Amino acid sequence: MWSCGRPLRETLEVMKNIRLSMPKMQKIWANSAMGKQGRDTALKNTLLLEKDALDQIARGNFTLEDSMCPATK
Image 1: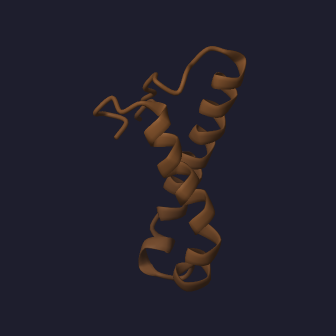
Image 2: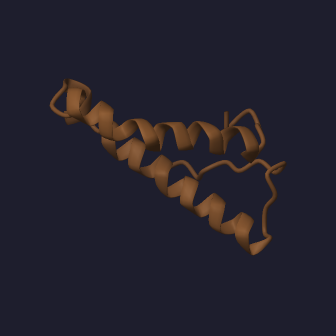
């Protein structure tokens, strides 16, 4: 969604759903192969981006119609 330029209105909704689903997912999949291979790091980065986007919106630097693409390594 980020690389396609979707607005924060849409991406923030997905990030919220990820954040709310993580505790339930962890109960089942915490020790799975993906859990041991970095999935949780990617999810935590998504949550950090959600917080950053909400902070930027609160400061007036972004609107819900803007798009935001995280930096890639």
